Amino acid sequence: MIPAILAVDQGTTRTKALVFDAAARPLAESASEIPLTYPHPGWVEQDPRDLLRSVVENARAVLAATSARIVAFGLANQGETVVMWHRRSGEPLYNAISWQDRRTEDFCDQLMHSDGGWLIQERTGLPIDPYFSATKLRWLLDNVPDARAMAKRGELLAGTTDAWLLWCLTGEHRTDDTTASRTMLYNPRSRDWDQDVLDVLEIPRSILPAVQPSCSLFGPVRADIFGRPIPVTASLVDQQAALFATNSGRRLLNTGDLEGAIAQFQSAIRAVPNYAAAHFQLGLALKRKGEGEEAAREFQKAHDLDPRLVPPRGND
Image (tube, rainbow, N blue to C red; front, side, top):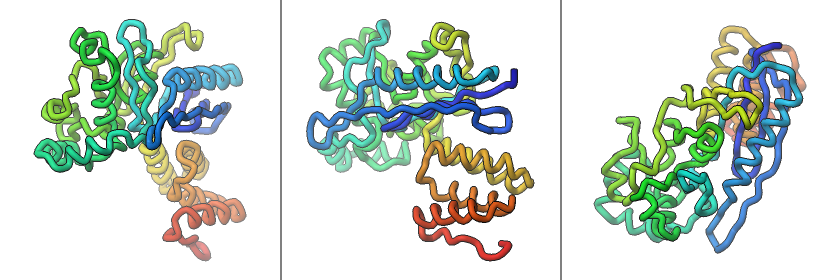
C-alpha cells in the first residue's frame, strides 16, 4: 500500500477531509456542512459535538474510499472559536462561541481604556477585539454556572476548537503556535501564554492547552475511532495552513517541479477557496505547464478576488 496523509479542515460552515499521497495528489475527499445558531443579535454559536462528529464521519469516509496506508494526520481549525468542557466526562459545558461572535464588545471597550488593555496589546501584538478568543473565554467563565469553581477544582478545560478536537481524538490537551497566537492570550516572544495577560482577564492557566509547534506530534488518534492509532503530526489555523501550502508551492515552482507546485496550490485553495494569491500562483504553474485555458481561469479568479493581481502577459 502507498503511504498517504489524512488531512481534515474543520471550518466555520464546512468540514472537509482528504487523503493525499506523497506527491500531494488527492486520493479521496469528503465534506459536510456545519450549522450555526444565532441565539441573540451579535451572538454566533455551534454545537461542539457537531464539529467532532463532522471530523470523524468525513475522515472515516475518505479512509474507507482508499486503500492507502495512512502514516499521519493533519488538522486545520477555525482559529478563534472557543469551547469549554468537563475534564473527566469530555462533555461541553456550553456551545462553541464562534470567532464571528460580538457579545463581548462592551467588555472590550472597557479594556481598551484601561492599563490592562494596553498591556494585552503590547504583549500579544493584537488589538482588543471580541473577534479573538480571550474575552469569549472570560465570558464563559463568568456566565457558565459553576465554571470558575470547576476550574479551581481542576475539573475544567477550555481552548480553541483544535484543542477540543485533539482532546476528543487523542486525549491530549494541546494547541499550536498559530492558533494560540489568535487568542489574545499568547506572547509570541515567549511562545507561551502570557501570565500577566491571563491575570488581567482572570483566566486560569490550568484550563488552557499546552502550546507546541504546528508541525510536531500532538499524539495518536485513539484506535477505536479509525480502527488503528494514527499520529497527529500537524495542527494549525486554516488560513496559516493555506499560506504554508502556498509557500511550499512557490518553492516547488522555483525548482521546476510543476506537478508538485500545482498540488500545493490546489491544497491551499481547498483550505481557503477565496485565497487570491494561491489562485494566481496556480495560474503561473499551469501556464508554465502549457495549460493556457486553465491558467487564464485561475488568473481571472485571482483578479476578481484582488484587482491588484494582474495576469502576466506573453511568456512572463
